Length: 82
Image 1 (cartoon, rainbow, N blue to C red):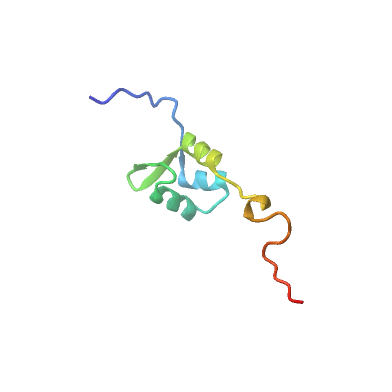
Image 2: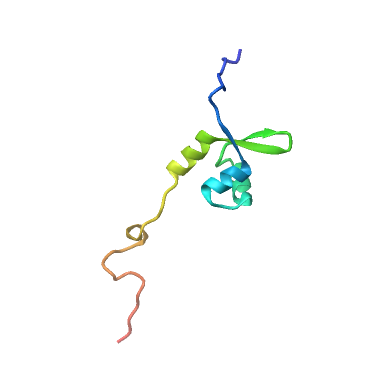
């Protein structure tokens, strides 16, 4: 037996709304949905994304800083000939 779930407080966004919030194209949102990186529910021919899923996706997103790309002593990536 499936446990009862209360969906009264769940807020869904359209693909266009998600794209606007994330400032990406709708195609990017569709790619995230189809790859499984962004959960969505299909209603007929359209998708709806739980607002909480968008918040969770953005919270786990990692921004690479310059310190994470290699040596910080300035020796990486430059070859000098004498």
